[in-house]
Length: 373
Image 1: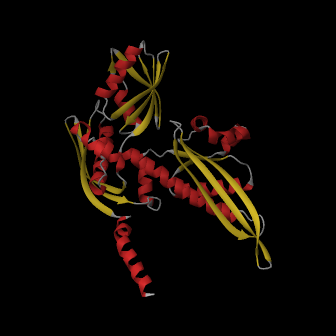
Image 2: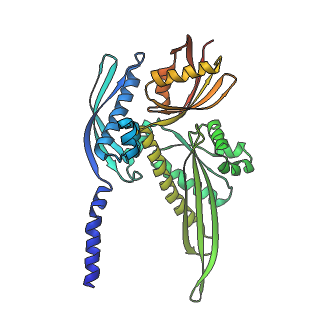
C-alpha cells in the first residue's frame, strides 16, 4: 500500500508543473505600430492594436523555433515563429496611443492565457468581436426528431457563448433534402449555400441513433446511443476549419434517445467551438487567408505587375498564390496579416500601371476588385 502511495505522490509532483502552467496567466506590456495609409487613422489604430496583441502573446508564451526557420538565410522569419504560439489574449487595456507622422503607435497591457479557451467567456467574446462577429449556421442533414433536438442543443450552446447565428430553417425551405444531405461531401457547395443565406461559417451536422437491448439480471434494459458528427466550413474560402464527432450512451427504456442526443450535442458544440476559436485566434495573431478576385486585366503581364505591386507596396501581405487566370480575371489566395476590410481600404483608389483599383465586393475572407479601363 505504501508503495502505491509513493508512486501516486511522485506522479503528482512530476505532473504539477504541467498542471499549474496549463492555464497560466501572464500580464505583459507591448507596443504595436502601423502605417497610416491615405489618412485612414482608425484603421491604422486597429492594426497597431493587433500588432501589440501579437507581440504580447509572443512575449508571454514564447515560441518553438525550428532549425529550418533559424538557418534560412541566417535570419529568423518572424511570421513563421508566431504560428507556433499557443496563447490567446484574455483581456487588454490601452495605455497610450498616438500618431507620429505616418506611423500610429499603441501601447497595451494584456492578460495572456494558455490552455483551453472554451470556458473563458470574456476571451471568447473578445475574439468574436475582433473577427467582426462572424455569423454561424448550424445545418443538420436529417428531418427526424433527434435532428431537431441536436440542433436546438448546439444552437443554445453557441448563443450562450456570444455567437451570432443564422436560422437554418430558410435553407431547409429552399433546398431539397437530397441537396442538403450532399453538402457534407461538397464543401464548396456548402460555401455557396452559406453565402446565399448570409453565414460566414457553416456547421454541417448529422445524427445517428440506436437503441440496443441488454439485461441486468432478470431486467431487460436498452442502451440508447446518439452519435453526432460535424464538419465546419469557412464560407468565403470553402476550406474546412475542423471536424468532430461525439457519442453518448445512456441506459433506459427502449427509444429514449433525447438525453443522449442532448449530451452529445453539448459535448460536440464545445469541441467545435474550441477549434473554431483557436483558428480565429491564430488568424488574429498571424495571417488569415483571403480570396482575392481581380478582373479587367488586359494581359498576363499586367497581372504579373499587379502581383508585384501587392508584394512590394501593400503592407501585411505575406504570400500570394495564383489559382486561376481566365479572360482577364484572376483568382488569388493571399496570406494577409489583418482583416479584409483594412486590405480593401489599402487597395481602394490605388494606381497600378495608370489604372485605378475599385472594390466591388467584400466579405469576411473574400474581396472582389476591378481595374479602371
